[in-house]
Image 1 (cartoon, rainbow, N blue to C red):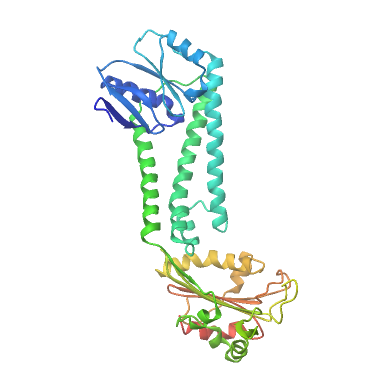
Image 2 (image 1 turned 90 degrees about the vertical axis):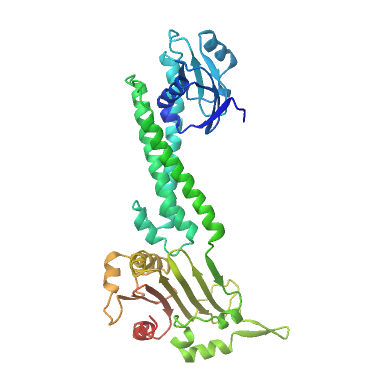
Length: 414
């Protein structure tokens, strides 16, 4: 960079074009004369302090015909070329008339361009809100509530949706308001150029820098503090998995487990291979909110038909969530219950969820549900939800044993 050039960050957007003009004029009075407009960095040449007038056209320079630029220059206005989404003109003659005074020019450049950006900002903000809906149970406008709903997701995702997305939505809503107000005033010809710019510049600076810091923080976290996720790829690994806090199926129904264990391998070309009619998996995970998330999943099919759609004769799934605090477990549980019931094919309603609850000594929460005729024929016929302190357990089961009668077995490990 030349010694005669000073670079400054421009914290103004298209909705701040009049504040940006005032900022450039203030820089000129300090002896910094604009020479180039980058996407974010502007170049200023050192010069004599002057009362220079700046005007900004909300269009890229390359979209302006050279003939039109020549007309501006013949009228006393010089174009500053650059890559910014707008074009800057200036003049040192205080008596030169405004370059964009007629209604046609305003409609063609100002209103049209700002309206396009206004609609784009609305679309982007809506997309962010839709991502909230996809990753939570519904639209969640409270970042704290979203934070707890996403407690079982990978840490970067929690960071993005609980911190970055709310900030970007707020940023978008502010821009939508500013664009709408500016377009309305321009169309009604009631806009008066404000003499201020410092408050708008500082506000934009804080928001933009906050987003940059958060993005850098996310990048550092993803690289240096990765989550730990381990999933089994074979029956051998699943059988070797150790977790004293899980009620394994071998403890839940020892006689059925002995039969399953005896049939886990079959012969294939005189080699022992995993039985395709049995699915047995374990997993372990942790993130920024959960110190441990572990599970065991067992499915046994009577046979595998040509379409692979046989209804299983045994299904058992247990998921343990061990949160960093009892508060996290308690706030995460309601959304997880609704999600689990819906995913497993149970008809979900607030009344039914309330009716599921029952009291059990030593547990903070206990709920049991059995499939009924109104449910969409779920494979898992029974589900149990238990919480004590920072531990929350979800059990899904489909077989003759009454799952509720086994609460004591699960509670003993909590």
